[in-house]
Amino acid sequence: MAPDLVSSVLVYDVGGGHVSAAVCLDRSYRLGPVVRGSHPAEQTSDAFIRLLHSLGVEASAGLSAPGGAELAIPGPFDFAAGIRHIKHKLPYLYGVNLKEKLAERFGWQPSQVRFLLDSAAFLLGEIGAGEARGVPRAVGITLGTGIGSAFAIDGRVVTEGQGVPPGGEIWNLSYEGGIVEDFLSTRAIQRSYKLRTGALPNVAKIAADVANDLDAAAVFAEFGHHLGVALRMKLSEFAPDVVVIGGGISRSAHLFLPAAMKELAELKMQLRVSRLLDHAALAGAGVAWFDEAKSRAA
Image 1 (tube, rainbow, N blue to C red):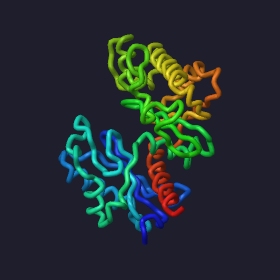
Image 2: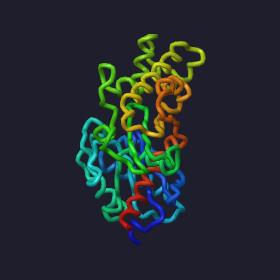
Image 3: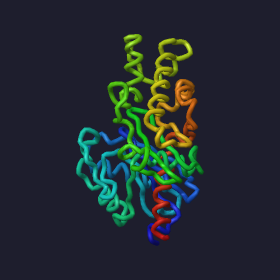
């Protein structure tokens, strides 16, 4: 059966330290059991391909054979060719043709392995099965070690046009004498807490202590303020109907969203927190696969 006609696809979310995989079962973007594995201790491309293959086999167990794979992966990356172009993260993948290697491992044609940017996958997941369904203009923001972003019009991710920054990325836009990511990331929260207390716990610990720690509460209020101001400054021209917040920090959204929404009170811009969370990019990879299949069939 041609890969574009199958009813299921293997989807991956490749993070900085782990990989998640599942089968996206159909155009409702339902996911089968999600499996997860850490990057291999043996830092070679072959070990990484073995990890992807083993997770794929595990995720597919007992399900109809998927017709290919769609991988959500961080940039910079040649998504058409399947080749990574940076050395400072996952250096053992630099210059490696993941498309060909993974296809060979599964016994597929290279055309059955596709890639998309992880932040775009997050937003597509929210469009297909989450908080941005039916929304004309949407933005996805992921908050974690950095800040990811994606823009969409009528369900399609766009990387240029009125109000869309280059590549749809806001992390490196100027803000408060630095860039947006300096103020909206895990290190920003930790830096702010250290300036107040001299301590450097992880973000989860700071969030857990908010009820009994005025400094922790102030840190998240400050984070929310910067989030609201940055979104107002960088998204106003695009004028999204909805901004969906995801990423690890979004689990503490109740601590910073009130301050962010205060800065956006005069705009017709809803802030919504992802309910798909870690599964959003997996669902979004399925959306990308089936959308491409539909466009090819048209």
